[in-house]
Length: 94
Image 1 (cartoon, rainbow, N blue to C red):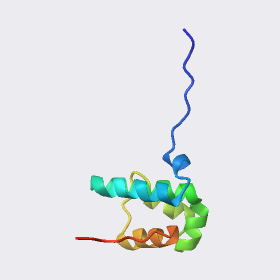
Image 2 (image 1 turned 90 degrees about the horizontal axis):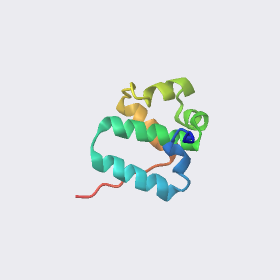
Image 3 (image 1 turned 120 degrees about the vertical axis):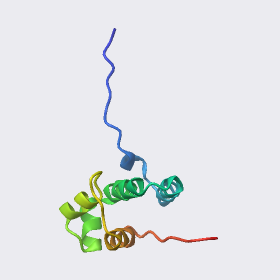
């Protein structure tokens, strides 16, 4: 039997358009898991270029990686800086 060849899956590879990012965030927020939101922001930042987002947010690249990692627990001000650097706006409805 032939060996199965695999390669790592990275969600960031599939976020090609702004609509992709919007759909991804909507799904993540619908889940309601704060850790998943943090992870998703990290994925989006990687898709756009972590160094670029770090520069726009005023955060160090390593700090940004750490804050948005699985073990990261970013403060709300970090989340807001990242969201603004990504060019994301939120709309709320009741």
